[in-house]
Length: 599
Picture 1 (cartoon, helix red, strand yellow):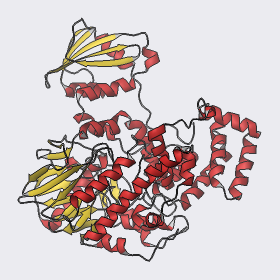
Picture 2 (cartoon, helix red, strand yellow):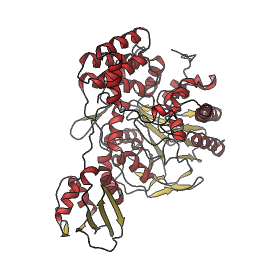
Picture 3 (cartoon, one colour):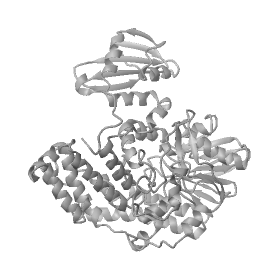
Picture 4 (cartoon, helix red, strand yellow):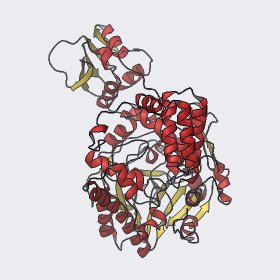
């Protein structure tokens, strides 16, 4: 299980502990109603020796991620780590501080900033930087500022923050519950972290739109006496992302483009497939652009790397990792191998395979290879038999019938499990559960198989998926604790709000209805026409000619209130108000707890 790894190497532990100032004691953060949104102390069990229920390599990584507190990275640069999934970085300026990536939740961000202020004084926030468009790097912003400061972000930030967190937000949040083990108890048989961090906080998500956009590599900004040089890296770990150098502090922030784990080319919660080729090329650009200009490299997760040679080796190996996965996947694809075949064929070269920061704690060779294949060739492997398969339940019923019924499937699965093949046992049992979701023995045996797979997995995300699957097979779905979309609704543009409505239209129900509504937003000076026809909700800005069924005069806040079920309030209208009621009646409500391990 050690795979040639040097467990005697203490470099990461030394770096993770370096610069420690103070911890939050107790390490618990609560919401205003007393609800616990973060409990760093719940991972104290990681101080013990590795049990047989956790892969030793993952246990090591989780122990590193469990370091909690305020750390000095360089003169005037501090990080708060271990108080959320991500790090908050604080840059001291002439009159206040610049906050980089204010965590996921308002409550954890406020606690992290409070920990800093307790040690360094009550300094005001003079600017905020969002390194990229994932919620754990902006969601806590209202915990450190009221938004009346410069907020810097890469170009395209708002578009991608909404597209990734709102448009497919319900499905993504449901799957993220599996990915992060959100409903699992912490402990040696449960959630131990997922490689990139320990867990996601469950507090309030906020967002203030950027006021300063970084639009080109090499762009320089100076705020509160702090000089920054930016490198745009779109299409890497996020669609909108950037690295940046503090040249006068000789410190380099790599956002989430280079961390102490193999990252995801396609995150298992769901997202657009990332570009491993361009990811590696931007890392090459960073090596060239920032070489010799920094003495410390830090990121939005994990611990820093100090020393020029160490930084360059780290960046070069991270670069080689994504380039290797990309190039070898396409080499083998062009020899006719499918994504699932290539995932079993590719092995990393020894220099990468034994580098702790390149291990598959968060991403994995297996699912990254499949993602690269998907990016270039899509879901179809070219075999006609796979072109028009039955959906999972119907496929399951047929397999179970061919094998002689559910009981026969359970017997066969038990044989494969006893023979040391839990992977195929899981496939067989999944057919049994989907063919007969009320069969208790099938669900329990599959749960046991998932636990066995979890306990040996080096990948923290895979472990959480397996254990959450086992939990839901036994007890059913639990409510997903975080709704990213709800916290971001207020900053959506009207166009984006109408996009979210279009996604919710129950098209067959609306096939034979045509509804035209004009919307005039008095607070924005904007006018829109929405037209429902053929089950499609279309929008046009600047109302065209023609008589609508209904005209509304309102504010964006009125619109959000109406969609939240607060009625029409003071909205003025002319025409058939029934048209609005019909439109709203055609909207589906998303299901935040849809089945995953059961139909």
